[in-house]
Image (cartoon, rainbow, N blue to C red; front, side, top):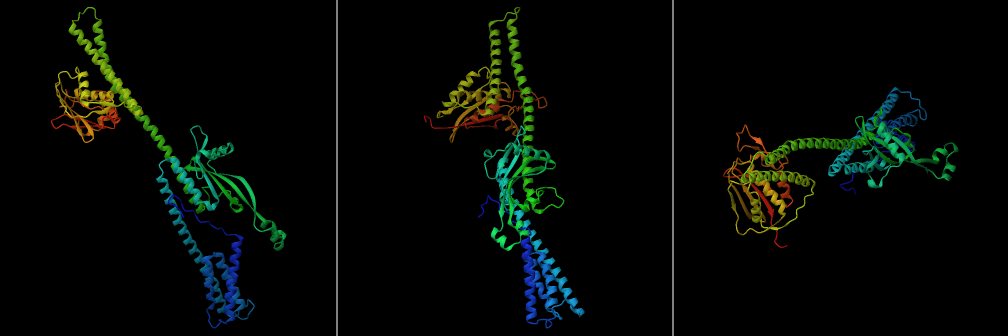
Length: 566
């Protein structure tokens, strides 16, 4: 019984042979003579003038179940036997009455026409059944291909289908071969074996390469062996010596056919078929030619399978090329974005540091102690800014590579926030920071440095995109099995369309805190929030942004709560 993952084979097509012609001849003679004997024995003619039309039943039966040849031969034998054994004078082909000639002529032509039409109808019914079966096979093939995700597995489905469907042709194995990046032919899929176990010999490699280059099939005999049809003692007793040789044996060939996989005029790969053929099959050395003057419907159906493999290979190649193009385009875009966003953020602090250092080196100017401290703080601030930028770049690279692993320990989130605010006191100078910390906040397992950087980046964004002296509110609370931290500012906020985009790498929101809408400009490197998202996700947490009811933006980040001490 066939499983859902198997494709039904095509039934074997029996080509006419001398044995089938001999059987048709015997049936035609026996059927016609038997009917003639019945008519003559019971003297049905001339009591039933049109009794000759009964021969049409035999003609119709042989045309339906045997062949056109059997039906036409039956008509001829019926014509002659009816004249010889039934119409007087008996045992002669002489007829004296014109109506007898007309009756027998009608019998002959009616028999030939009936046999021809019945055979044509039978052939049409067989063709319809064959087309329905082929449609079902192709549907199953497409269904099984779509169930596989990888091109290698899809090609294996096609190779197995070729063996299953065309096993009546003698195909017992099938390999799909393609050149690798170095031009060496490699087996990409095999019907009966794993690809790792199939290797091409040097001669097979050269043969496949020739077919790939010229686009023409090649057949090779692997082994030939005789198969005896009749035992020798029967041949010597019943058959003369002149025909004893042809009947004594015929050859069975183990062959290998290498066929091109074509997409238009381009050869994208080759198929290697392992077959067992007899003499009659092997005589048709052009059987697998795709473009023939009189193409066989069977070979056209077979090439449909190869066309599926060709299209699949070409689609995979185009997908790889499109992926390469997309990667190059994204690389160019990222390079341009990196130069655009990072160059400004690098140049600005370097300019400040250089100017401050140059001022210290001025011998003609005497700086008081307060001014010196101010310049030193400026240098420290810009150095921290550079350090954060370089850290964001490195962290973003490690996040994309999946190499960033948190080293978690148990901390109080409120204490971590206090540490960050203390370190950013110079950045937050002049701003009121409102803290909402309930007393029952449980500790959470986190990487201190990662969360420190997340909070730093979010607070730095709040300062950058809000007017001076705008308050910032930080709240920590527990919600179900998560610890939630919200950081709200009272700036211009973020539009709904940009709330997802701001977490993308190098995406920057226009800064409107000190300019009109027409004069808005982008600041920052566009890395801070992308790094925040990556660092939070390493903790299995989430980060998002909403619009604050009192105006401005509010960032939410969550961390899963575990059981302290486990």
